[in-house]
Image 1 (cartoon, rainbow, N blue to C red):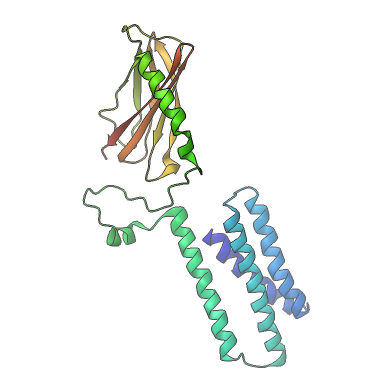
Image 2: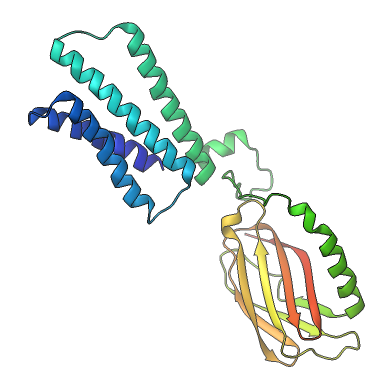
Length: 255
């Protein structure tokens, strides 16, 4: 976001002064310097959508920048120096633009490790995630009653689902993960649709959802590669003609 914002401002300023040098009227040079960078950003955003808030910030900043350039060009035409009050207002808005760009950069990418190490002590020497972790759907708590009903049905099934190969996982290394699925009588359950979800609370961009394939009766496998060490939440979701099963468990990865 900061690249397109500040890069667009530099491009707009260069476009304004080149247009003025080529003889374009001051007003229309300002309009061009505001409209063209925003249209180019619209084309970029159509392929790399960052959100409506980022789009609105680009629009407001490019528009304000065009206004400042028009005022500056008008003063140049009249060979007048700018009064201190407009200078103060312009400086204030420049400060706001920089501040918002910094905050958006932190929300999307997190703090640099050199800065987070100063303000966020990390005694366990794990990777600290400071970026925005994601959103929670509105009124998600309303689905809790349905969840309780599914838990009761699952308890009556008595299925036994055991993850294999998760005790020695290492971050950044691929590993084969197995799931043994048995019914309440200890018989293997065949032909189930088994999915394994890995959720990282600190950074939702690392979340994964994997399909597990049956290699033997009641035994399902998949390949797993987790990028970072620390705590993960594993979620097993099993769908079968005889029932539905869902279970979560905590995982801890070493470096």
